[in-house]
Image 1 (cartoon, rainbow, N blue to C red):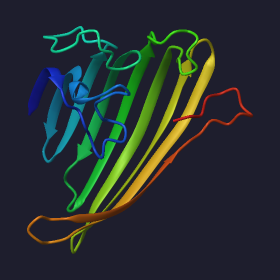
Image 2: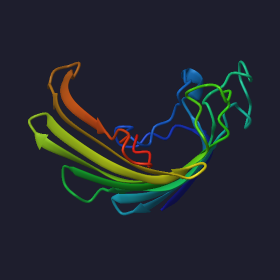
Image 3: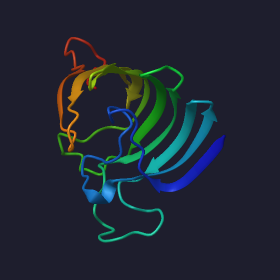
Image 4: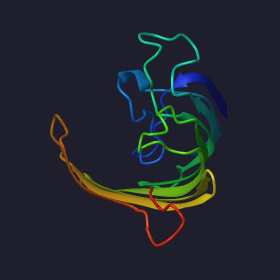
Length: 195
């Protein structure tokens, strides 16, 4: 009923909308996160608890290739929970919560993309349904609340949906149409609304 993994690992959940490894400077070398994942089996359902620590440059475990290559622009730490309901026929329901910190941007203070330290709470859910005849549909929505130094509130949202048809031939080609919506910043408020 309980399984625990520790170390470098891939953590992709759902369609990778929120739970996806890799970073802005990624390549094949950042196809992992450094973390602890505990999975509790609840019959056909499961609860996953995780803790992650990803510094901007490799520090943990054996380092391969160029140790000085940046993987992301800042240090990241996160804890979270991901629940997958598996008892519903042809339907998947997932819910998640993640608390994440992004600290110590490595870019110079003069860089316009430099980000102050921030903390984010992300709460979301994903729905997937097998419709029959090779058709499936998914929808996901998440909201973020947090703060960015020195005193900026963060309030953002993101959604996505997809309709997919899988053709029943040898190579199983698919045709999909989807939509992604992300909040943008409202210049009329002091808060940051950018997803």
